[in-house]
Structure formats: C-alpha cells, structure tokens
Amino acid sequence: MTTEQLLLITGQLNERRKKVEADIQSILNELEEIGTYENVDDVEDLAQLETLNDADRALLKRLQDEKRAIEKALAKIKEGTYGKCSDGSEIPFEKLQADPLYEC
Image 1 (cartoon, rainbow, N blue to C red):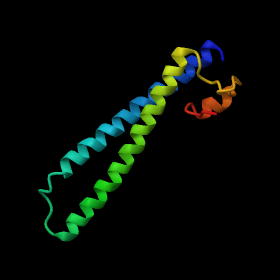
Image 2 (cartoon, one colour; image 1 turned 180 degrees about the vertical axis):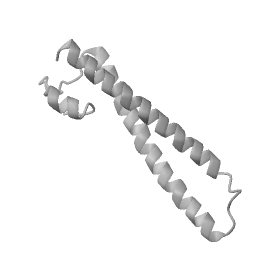
Image 3 (cartoon, rainbow, N blue to C red; image 1 turned 120 degrees about the vertical axis):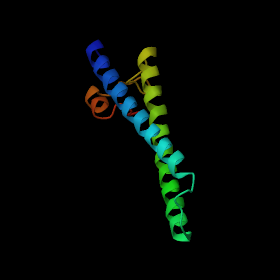
Image 4 (cartoon, helix red, strand yellow; image 1 turned 90 degrees about the horizontal axis):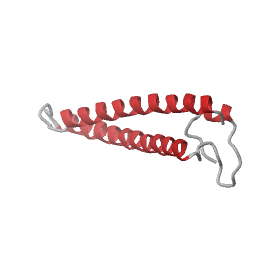
C-alpha cells in the first residue's frame, strides 16, 4: 500500500472516530439526562424509559466496539501491519477504502 493510500485511510478512520466519539458522548448525555426518573409519571412512562435505556445501551456498546476497532486499525497503520492478513497476503486497497475496518 502506498503512503498516499495509507494517508487516505488514516483520514477516513480519524473522521469516523470523531463521529463515533460524538455519538457516544450524545448517548451518554441522554442516558444521564433521562436517568434521573424526574419526568416519570406512571408505570407506562417507566416502561418506555427502560426500553429507551436498553436500546441506548445496546447502541452505546456497538459504538464503543467500533471505536476500539478504529483504534486497532490506526495502531496497525503505525506498526506497518495494516492491510495484511495473518498469512501475510495483502488486502486489496479498494476493499479497505470501502471498509477501513475490514480484517481477514
């Protein structure tokens, strides 16, 4: 992979990481906001709140997993192992450009 290609992928990964971090912070803020139960008037509201919390927590976990994968890919770029399978074969640049987190 060329230096220019690695710079392009690094830029994609950094932009994606910024978006994921912003989404994580937004969910954390929302969970903190609604976690007070101040606006719960009845059992139905409580049930809706619990469902929302579960959905937010599932999304938060997915985003945190994605952030870890992005950081792993960026570390591989620094190490010089990005874009390579465990058997040493190269992943086509087009595949990595479409999905920078792709692994063999």
